Image (tube, rainbow, N blue to C red; front, side, top):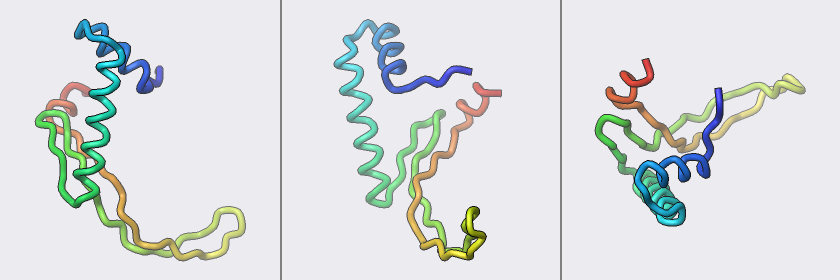
Length: 93
């Protein structure tokens, strides 16, 4: 299974839509920046049929260092989450 990176995605979209790579890359960059800004403010971004981006709060917890087996305290933090939409789930089945 091949891993598709941003450059390969830009190439594919540029070819499919007969656009320049530079224009497609600018749109993808703007989309990523805007999604990051919106979820960082506490809101969520829903792309109907594709999925929803949001921020989730992860509680503090105790963990174990795998090298030393010592118990460590893992602090609470915010983490980005993506929930796939119905159309994406169906397409992957």
